Image 1 (cartoon, rainbow, N blue to C red):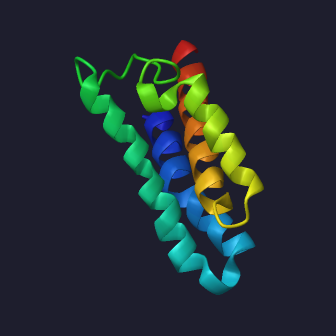
Image 2 (spheres, rainbow, N blue to C red; image 1 turned 180 degrees about the horizontal axis):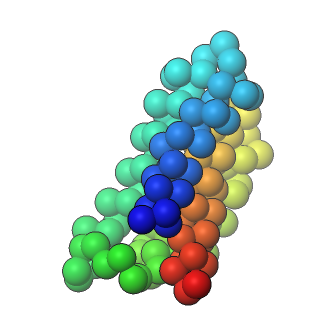
Length: 104
């Protein structure tokens, strides 16, 4: 239960705090953009079963691979794509934390 609360808080609430902290003038727009990056979870639809609470997403789903993570990291260096890069890197960090917590 605690793992689920942490996971979804980091996916939905943390981008709001980041948006408000770093993009105060456009924080709502930035937060919506960051939430839109949750679309990378559509790759879960390719898995069977679609949802498995005991499966680590990292390097299992196509948009959660190390190759994809490299692209997400590159997005951080362009000012226009930085909010997307931040959100995608946060998403991957959240899923990585979830994998770690799963092993405890």
